[in-house]
Image (tube, rainbow, N blue to C red):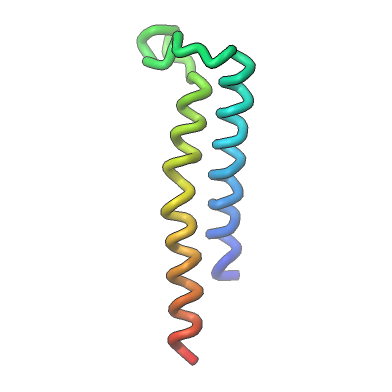
Length: 74
């Protein structure tokens, strides 16, 4: 159960990254509206992509730390 939340977070991070790439491709890789003030405060697919990419390393780090502490306790 200790790993479940970390793996759920990692899954959500990869899902956000994938969705951001797919939606950005759908907009033909346009940078129009990247800044929130450009397009009536609507989210751009790059926001999803960046959020997903930012979530992956900490989630992996937490999984590695939990695995390490599990092996050190034996």
